[in-house]
Amino acid sequence: MSGGDGQTARITPYRDGPILVRGPFTLIDQDGNEIETHQKTIALCRCGRSARKPFCDGTHKATGWRADSGAQQRPATGRFLREV
Amino acid sequence: MSRLPVPRGPVSEVLLTALAGAPGSLPPVAVTAPGDPLADDDLHLSLYVLYELHYRGFDGVDDRWEWDPDALALRARLEAIFEDGLDGALRGWAPPAADGATMDLALRAIIDADDGPSLARHLEVAGSLEQFREFAMHRSAYQLKEADPHSWALPRLWGRPKAAMVEVQTDEYGGGDAARIHAQLFADAMDALGLDRTYGAYLDVLPGITLATVNLMSLFGLHRRHRARIVGHLALFEMTSSIPNRRYATALRRLGVDDSRATEFFDEHVTADAVHENIAAIDLAGGLVEQDPAAAAGILYGARALVEVEARWAAHLLGRWDAGRSSLAAAPTEVAA
Image (tube, rainbow over all chains, first blue to last red; front, side):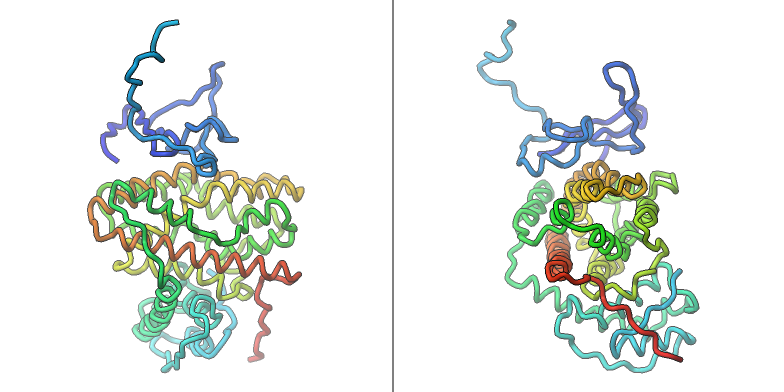
């Protein structure tokens, strides 16, 4: 891996897998409580099927969930982006 | 350190007798090809002992045996038999096509093609506590030195794959906290299961088919020519770890073992290996092939060899349990001196 300056977190979606967070970060829930982790690098669930959310537990492999690492292209028609 | 095991055949007999004496005293040893080079007790106990000289050694064994030329020569002959056995077992296997950008997909294809029995699934839904304890005894041969065989590769890597392996191994070694070293967590789990946590305590009752799973890592880890194979082994190991470990943790809770020291090792591996598997497949294995395209074949071989040896080991355990028997080797009787 490259590009880390040690000052900010690096957040990487991995192909067909979770989002890895490296570097200085604090994980807090919506009420401001810290979610404890003793790992320097964590994997956050991206498929929605983990039994250990917000962490990945590998379930995406069993369900055959797929996603690219890079950003998804916006739908060409723009229909889904219309203001309600 | 641990004490030397009891011999289990003509090669280990000569070897273990010699190791109790001074380096330079290993007599010529007749080595014949065993029936099953991936499971033979004499072969794999001898190899395990010779490799252990590079890890922690044994009580009462001179440390200089590690680099004794005759011991190394014997090790090379035994390794050649083991490697021929691996080649034979993998004959006919066609590695998936892969380059640096698709190594993770190729490794996944190897996993998808694995039709070996699921030990984790059996323990999760049906296994007894006694079977779980046997499973832990088998695994102690590796888990009490977890990550060490792969760490041999570190000086043989540089750049992106080196950083990736360090990132994984740092976590395996507790991230600076000795109590969180994974081998330590496993020792704690053994305690909680009423097992002996002493390094090497169960060596005498582990069959060759179990020792082969650890010898595979030592073989790939100790030889620079196999650096791609040990990388592939680690990548596949991590990629097939999080879901089975969740099953093992579920098994313990189903069996009424709620001591957190027993479950912590398996719980830790669910989330830890969900991190490691991505780093190992993409940054480590993929990163190595980006640097060295020729490494792809070795990575896939190391991964496939792991699947092969693990499947045989799992089939052994399940077969013995199906027959209502113990999966451990019969405890040897010491020959009176």
